[in-house]
Length: 619
Ligand code: COA
Ligand code: AMP
Image (cartoon, rainbow, N blue to C red):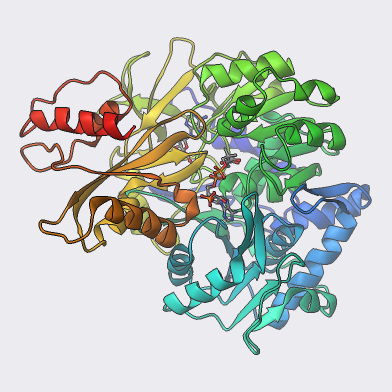
C-alpha cells in the first residue's frame, strides 16, 4: 500500500456523515483476506439514512424524487415526507407477508416511483432486493429467481417502450413456470395503460397492499449485511450475483455524491438510467437520497419520447445541477439534432456538469456535447461490481482537467494498476490488464451471492492481491487512466453489458447450428452490437436465411430484446488456432474493417478471406 493513506485516514470523516444505530469500533475487517468487510461491528439502516433522518432534520417538504415520464405525460414531485410515508407503509405490507431481515425480494418493474418505494421498503426491513431489468426475457428472470430464491416478487402490469406497451405480467408468469423456486406471493402494480390478470391467492394488488398497510420503523442491520443483489453478465450464461452491503455503501455513495458529482443537500441530480442497472441503484434510488438531494426518475428515452430535446426539457424544467448518462444517448441525440438546434430553446443555466459512463466515450461525442452545452463533460469509469466510480475527474474538488480519451484519474480509495499477463505492473503508457489493488474501498462488492469461492475464483485469482476488472487500458505519464477494451467475452451495447458467451450458448441450442462465434462490432449509435457467425449442420433441410431468423428470434426470446442481436450470417468455416480456439479478436477486426495480422497459430489462413468477403456481401 506504500504511499496510500490508511483506511482510517480515508474513511473516518466520510463515515461521520452517516447515522449509525451502533457506531463502529473499527473501519475494516481484513481477517479473512482476500475477503474484506467495512465497518464490521456497526449497525445501521439504509432507508433510515435516505429518508427518516432528512425528515427529522427539516427536509420533509423538500422533493426527494421527481418522476418525469414523457411516455405517460406525467410529472410528479414526491417529498421526503411523502416518500417516507409510502416506504414505511410498503415495508409494513411486506412485513405482513412475512418478509424480514435477510429474505430476498425480486423486483421486476419499469421506471415508476413504486420501484424506488419497493427497493427502499426492502432496505427498511433489512430484506435483500434483487432488481431485474425489464428488457430481459422470462428465462433470465427465472435464472435470477432460482439463484436468490426470493420469498416475494414485486412487479407491474406493463412497461412502456417507444415501440409500444411491454406486458410484464405474462413474462413474470412464464418465468415462474420456468423457475424451480416458486415464491408464495407476487405484488403487482396495475398501470392503467394495460392491466394484468391476477392469480387469486398468489398475486396481490400493489394499491391495496399499500393503502391498508401499517407503517413500520427501520430495522437495524449489520453494516456488513447485504442490501441488495444485482446480477451482471460474465463469460458464461450464468449471471453473477453481485452483493452490496449497507454500511460501506452508505459511506461511499454519500462521499461520491459530494466529491465526484458535486451534489449537496437540496441539489437536483439526474441519472438517466434504469433501476435495473447499477447506475439506477446507486444514483437514482440511493445516492441522491442518502445525500439529502433530489433525484430525477425518468421514464423515457433520449430520442423519440417525444423528441431529441427531452433531456434539455427536463434539465430546464427541474433545474438539474448535474446529469449522468451513457455516451450512446448523446450519440442518439446528436444523430437527430446534429447542430444542437433544439437545445437552444431551453434555459440550461442550472446545469454545471454532464457525466458519461457505461461505455467508452469517444472524443467526437464529448466534443459535440461540450460545444453545445459549454460545460465540462466528464467521462468516468466503473462497473456493476464496484458500485461507484473508480476512475473520474472529481467535480466536487473543483480541480480537474478533462483529457479526451481518458476517464480521469483513480478516485480516492481505488489503487489502479496496469499489469502484464504474469501480474507484474507495466510502465506508463503501456497497454495491459487493469487491476485494482486489494482491499477495494467501501461500497464495492464484498462477494457474490452465496458464492465466496466463485468471487475469489472469478475476480481475485488471476492477479493475487488484486481485483481483475476485465478491462484493458493504460495509465499515462500524468496518471490519467485510458480504458480501451474488455479482456473477456463481455460487450457493451448501448451502455448495456452483455455476454457474447451467453449468446453463443443460446445459439448452439438451435438443432441446425453446429458451431458459432459471437463478437461485438462497432456501431455508430450503440457503441457496439453483437454479430454472430454460424456453421450449420451438414444436410440440414432448412434454408440458411430461415435458420438465421430463428436464431435472432431465440436470442430475443431467451435473453431478451436488450441483447439486440440483429446480424447473423452463415459461413462455411470459422478460423481457429491449431488447438481449436476460435479467433474472435481477428474476426472482430475483419468485421470492423480494421487492419489485422494473420495469426501465426491459425490452422488455415484462407478462411479469413472467405469470412471477409461474406461480411462485405452481407454488409
Ligand atoms: N423493458 C422492456 N423492453 C426494453 C426495456 C425495458 N426496460 N429497455 C429496452 N427494451 C427493449 C427495447 O424496446 C428494444 O426492443 P426492440 O428491439 O423491440 O426495439 C430493445 O430492448 C433494445 O433497447 P435499447 O437498448 O434501449 O435500444 P433502442 O434502439 O430502443 O434505443 C438508445 C437506443 C440509444 C436510445 C437507448 O439504448 C438508450 O436510451 N440508451 C441509453 C443507455 C442507458 O441509459 N444506459 C444505462 C447505463 S448508464
Ligand atoms: P457495467 O457493469 O454494466 O456498468 O459495465 C461495466 C463495463 O462497462 C466496464 O467494465 C467497461 O468495460 C465499460 N465501461 C464503463 N464505463 C466506461 C468508460 N467510462 N469508458 C470505457 N468503458 C467503460
